[in-house]
Length: 447
Image 1 (cartoon, rainbow, N blue to C red):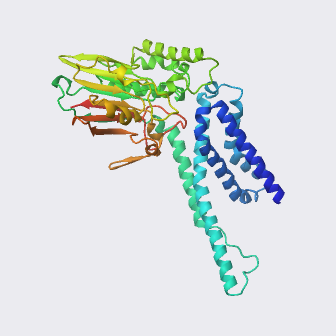
Image 2 (image 1 turned 180 degrees about the vertical axis):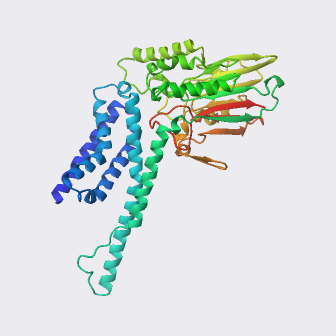
Image 3 (image 1 turned 120 degrees about the vertical axis):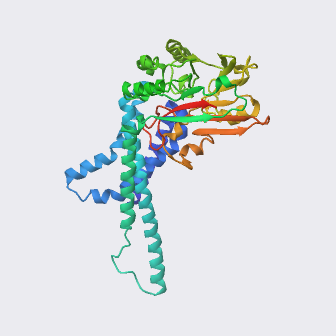
């Protein structure tokens, strides 16, 4: 028995090491998620060890069926890892595979809850066993033969119920909430705002991730909602695609239908540079980015890459500044150059900045660019999971980003209020759904 256990441990270590080496070689930027992957696999094994005896009570056919269903998500996950050795990641991640992996993710996260409660019951069982043995020795009596301290049925049932609720929520997040678009109206008060700009309507969208959309209908609905707002200006704050520009081509006619009185302005996000693709050559990667630039030209959107545009409305001037992706985290591109982007912007009434990653605001904008009135960002998606209600807002995104959703403000050294608005995103990446943090179209009105 001991040799068998050691063999299992040895094989598990080889398997885990192999997965890590594969991840480093094929998807080096994803290696940061390896501890999460390892945790989920260990949780899977622990839960199986806890429930397998109940499954083995059934006849052979039912037992094999339940065993196969339990391990199917793991087999699917392993299959994707193996296929990635032979098929480029961007070709492997079709719409079908995106949603299949989303269901697999939902199953794995759902397994965490029963595993947690079963772990609690195991702890209680061990502690109870130790206490009883101490009592038995103290009283110089023996525990009754065959007597066992079983897991608390309450904890078992609680684990199963919570796992079922989580699983249902994740499925609903895919089939319903992923396209439950919300318009968030956000007035922003700027001191000294020229009267010609009062009531100016700016619509912001972000993080389309077109490679993850299941149908054209949902995007058409979102574009209709944008146009219904009759925006003066539209801002898109990056991440048009997941991996390659080709993901955007089927949606070109739909996006070309967005209308704004004074233009549509956009910047690049971390996914737009082709950083998550194993390119055969640097020229292929450069061509992919050039295809995206040409795509923006065909849409009629103004792509800002460390430069700016001035919008004249009556006697007033709005400076719209856009930077390439800049992030405080080294795993994301940091190509933004605010010094270059703000050249020639001295004689404008208000300055608006488009910068994909919200960490840029605190680490650069607030420190050296006190004349930027509002920064528009995206990137976080609000983690696509969280709770938002009046007076309370929480998401795992807050542990990665100080500013992760909604409006933030700070007084500059010149006693001037500077704002940051972080859009929750319109599309999805990774998990193809949303729970609690719904896809957002922002309407900012200057007052």
